[in-house]
Every structure is written in C-alpha cells, then in structure tokens.
Length: 243
Ligand code: WAQ
Ligand code: MG
Image (cartoon, rainbow, N blue to C red):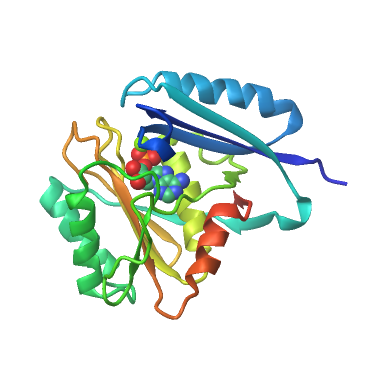
C-alpha cells in the first residue's frame, strides 16, 4: 500500500484576510507524507514572513488528507527558453507564440490589456474566452490552481519561482478545455514570465517593468468547455507532476 499524502497550503495577506480585502503577499503549497507536514508548514510560515512584497498580518496554513483515489499523475510541460532585449520585444514574442495556438489574436490582445490594466494583483487567474477574449471568471479573485506538487529531481537547477510555475503550468496544460496560458510574476524583483500551450512552456524575460508588484495569469478557455469542470479540476483535483 502506498503512503497517505497530505496537501499543505499557505496564503498570506496584509490588511486582513484575502476575503476581507487584504492585499495578497504570498502563497505556496505542496503534497507530502505526514512526517513532512510540520516541516513544510514551518517553512511556508517563514516564507510568508520574509517576502519582498511586505510583511503579512494574516497567514493561513491548511492541511488536508488526499484521498488516494483522487490523486492523478501528470507529465511536465517541456521548456523552451527565449531571449529578448526589452518588454516590447517580449510582448511581441509572447503574442506571436500564442498565436500559433488556436487562440485568436483578439483574445491574446485583450489578455495583455487585462493584465496591464490591473490596479493590483489578483490572487488567482483570469479565465478568458479563447476566441472572443471575453472574461469568463466572476468577481476579482480569479481562479486559484491548487492541490499540486512535483516529484522533482531534475529541476534542481531552477529557482523557486520557476519550479512552482512549471508545476502550475503543467497542471493547467493537463486541463481539458484550456488552450493556453499567459503569465508574469507579481514579485517586484522578478520580471520573467511565460506563455504555454500544446504542452510547451515558453520562458520569456522582461515581461514587466522591474519594481512593479503587479502580475497575473490568464487561462484561455475553449468555448465548448464546461467552466465548472475546469474550475473544479484546477482548484480541487490533486495532481503530482512527474517526468
Ligand atoms: N493559481 C492561479 N493564479 C495564480 C496562482 C495560482 N495558484 N498563483 C499565482 N497566481 C497568479 C496571481 O494573479 C499572481 O499575482 C500571479 O499569478 C503571479 O504569481 O522563471 O512567480 O507566483 O520560468 O508571482 C513565472 C516565470 C513566474 C518563472 C511566475 O508568479 C520562470 C510567478 P507569482
Ligand atoms: Mg508572487
């Protein structure tokens, strides 16, 4: 029999809990065996308390058991590194890459506009119709991808941002009904972003200005997909990413 696994998740905010309007500072999660739960909770608490976006006054750490029958194993996205000189070139590249997928140019342009117009970062991702570019998610929270981790020996060389983005992007790519993703970080000192589609993670530098604490994600949704099924998978289905 395999060992029982637990999902450990942390979210931290400033100015009260997220649901009461607090400003999101940091979030992290993992899937581990019981003997690692305490250690991970401790390290997530430390991480929340030492974040470049500021000091939180609210930290929430949740632990729950993963029913063995619900766990899915999914493959990693493959990585393509791109090199660009500035934000303009990066956005042009991101647009031309995404346009190789079935996502329309209008939806791609709207997605950039949505991200650039954000007054502050959302906690989750926007869902955008891949043809019309219309926003499909409700409210300003976005959809938060959760219950994921990796078995992860080959990613030793990557930084934490990249490791976590690869896991998230892999889960998103494994979701039926999602055609692609656009992302850049909300961390002021991290300007790398990516677009992913067809199982490939295109890593692109200079996706935003250094010093900006506004980042975000857009998931491009197939018009025939059922939104509730997509959201349930992203939020609640436990996945482990592996080679
Ligand atoms: N589910 C949905 N959206 C999320 C999640 C999540 N679990 N976590 C973050 N977001 C959204 C939210 O709007 C954040 O403001 C935004 O994405 C950026 O999150 O070197 O670090 O965690 O290859 O700041 C990409 C490049 C880094 C990595 C992305 O995102 C690399 C990053 P951050
Ligand atoms: Mg961040």
